[in-house]
Length: 262
Ligand SMILES: [Zn+2]
Image (cartoon, rainbow, N blue to C red; front, top):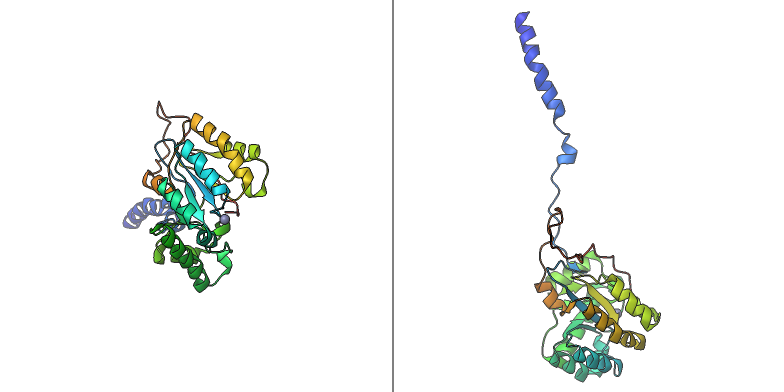
């Protein structure tokens, strides 16, 4: 009887301890996160941003933009359409000569997510060849039209075709032509360190918006780099800690989900 009691005595704490163990479900280790295949913005230690201009080159507007960027000593990134490159390789040559970066934005601006692998490959490779033909250098950045790709396509373009897929976190919706002042104010409101700013060098309003936009971004202390330079400046996101003294008030916040234009 005593032995039985003693056994029970030892059993009780063991049972309690077992009961206190958390159930297996919440502690199940999560699979490691997949390395991201797209970039919308980066974490940087400094006021660096990348301006990007899509859908050109445009015969008249892109040279006007290049004049403006040269006046401000700003380097930008142009995501070009293969068809337009074939028509104006000289504009691409000028852009590269003046320090800008060229990215691939497909041959004819289709929604790649709705196309076959072969068609997607053709859109990208044909544009790549046109860019190499113009500037003797292979693009390493790709922006899908409308920001639209399936997950499988993202892996295929990143892993097999060797592109960094670049989206954006600042979108002034300039393609809707809301007027230069609105384009400018939207960019100024949303841009943070590490931002990738989307706009289009095929809309006159966008070019009209740029003098004030560039001047005011400069006044806010932003430094302009190409997308590849911005990727090199990327620093790890620090764990959430109490804000140390002297941290600038302009820490980047979570990127805004891209809207489907591109
Ligand atoms: Zn586009």
